[in-house]
Length: 205
Length: 219
Image (cartoon, rainbow over all chains, first blue to last red; front, side):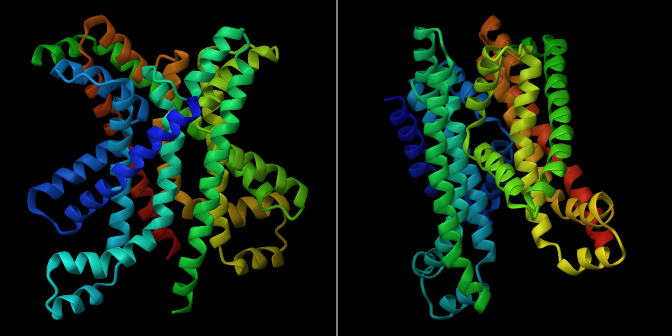
């Protein structure tokens, strides 16, 4: 039960955060006048902001403005905001590394902007960004226990509860630790697997 | 809203105390874990498979475990084994153990990029063991690793916020107690976020100065 909610929170944040990061990266890549400075500041702040502090800020401060969130949605919001900032950097790295000639060639063929992005840029950038994105997902799963601070039932919190009931906090914690380790370990393996086929052809050409 | 921030300003001594505590935690943890990393890296690269295996297992385990759970484990598990530590000490211990694994992995990454001829010519000149490590291998490895070490330092800053859950009086926990006393969560946590930002910007600037310096040295 506890495990499911952690995975759920992380999953929702990943699903929203990855495209959001791409959007932010495109804003910076396209050098949109004011927006790109705003995104730069946003990414800079969010990247240096600890997950706990951000979750506390969102959970306690939003009710001050009349928006009341449940712990789950506050957790998802906080994790999404921070992972979007990190994903933006990953996407931006991929976009900067993207060969400029191909973009210019598409331009020369008179492709409209949307088509250019969708057919030329994204299919390639997506592949080169994937290891970085998975790495970021791993970091996200590792920071998701921070949601426990505002009292949502996730693995950590469930372990704490079981520990409080049986007066022996250790076994549930070790169980939670193992559960997380398995999840993260699988993700690290996935990342290594993804890195290999992509980096090989580059070495040849 | 303005009055909220004035209240925060009124709590300056407490906040300064918390900020200083975060800073001290980060500096201690970073220094010790870098030293530990320097000790662990030769073991990771060791030609004896047993030693390399054990250290690699430790590093991988640390990579897989969320820091918050690790803090809980240190905080609850050590007393059952008869070791009593204060909250502060167990916080530092958790930070050091966790990050020394990352430091070791980062240094190993830099080491693997190192051209083999440097080490071989060092050996040919009769360097071996400790002096080979100190004079030939470690200086370029650390120089190369500076950018990623800077990133890890920022990670330590962010990890230190987790220590608020075991009641170490660092920035986040100070702000949390202020917001629960005066009911000004937005102002309190926003100040915390901005202070963290400031700290990380300083780290980034220092890291980039050091990177430039090391690149000049290398060429």
